[in-house]
Image 1 (cartoon, helix red, strand yellow):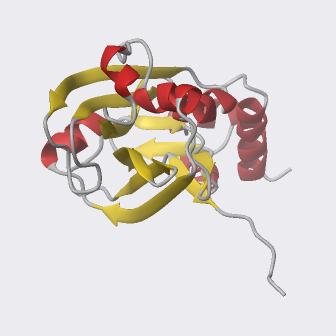
Image 2 (cartoon, one colour):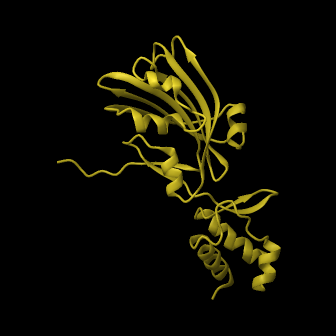
Length: 226
């Protein structure tokens, strides 16, 4: 078998089987060249093909790592990030940053609101930033909910049925502070999801979530109309 193909196929098998997990460091080019008895250029070619397929991530001066597979979400649903991340076999985490009551939220969620900000994690790495306004007139129990233990989106899906939702999806550049929280470069494109949900015509919540562009896919499946 071609050496580059053998390296590529065996690394692929190790990743697919779960032997190598997302975030694991791949042996260096020197180590792989010695293991397979080939030139470093051959190893580099194999790793380049793996990176192009999305299985590994090559980081300058840091090495090669097993890539975190992107999380897929249906565009027409309101996703629970905890469930989506867990479905990929990764540990989910949530850290509350700030929570405060405001007399008036924002243009899409006016009136008394609870403002909640925090960070979602996948496999102990930042996955998305969240800023959420919850209408206290519609969801008064949110004021006493424990959003340190549970993300507000997960809590809302379990407590408040929604009837309508509107998504706005954009590619954006993060601020310097947002980039630092996500662990990406200041000029890295991110995916912004801006969503408002209603119940019987009344706003329940408005949320802005900022995702690492390499960790999240929005997917829509549909049939042609008549």
